[in-house]
Length: 273
Image (tube, rainbow, N blue to C red; front, side, top):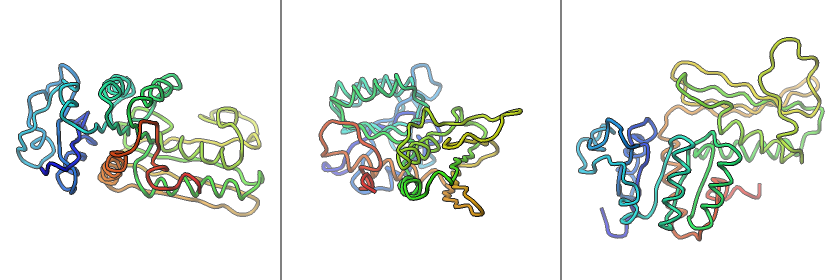
């Protein structure tokens, strides 16, 4: 590792995304692995993180002591669970480090706590770290702005059978983008979980459907269904490495940015589309 490399801690190191991130760090110039973290009591504590990621030993043992690792790191990347995000955000804020959040499923109260931590840390938070997905989000906003209310908007997503939150963070990103394009409040125009005799579709609503099964990495569609025609914008993820590479790109971008809460749209220069 070069002395100029950005040193990152990977939280949730034993999970699917954690292992992908460790692999990606090893393959990315300008980055070095400063530590690997799992929760206290994890059976993975003490294991070699390189072996967990299928790379062979790298000498970085899995630990639960995040604060100690941050003293010798530039930032932390995590795809964990919402409660862990809040604890990690407190630690990165106290240390004034970069924090990349790929975790989804946060409540409004948790999002507020993350925004507060961003007063002291440089945080990039996104429901999806993929370049393609963030282009899809920008396009969804633009199409929603262009088409009138004659075009109903439906967001459809499918993930593997182990995913614990629904709709996915990416589906919500698409819903928010569509709502912004239409200049409406998503919370007031969101239709989820249709079942039974629901009556006709409420004009102006943005619908969500969540599918779960098998080993699907992630599929998302924004559908604009109008009179006698339908426009579908779709992204299919085939490998978790696209999310890992996006998270590392965000970390390198954030390294010299001042404290604040950023999105992948900021990282990729898509915020004004």
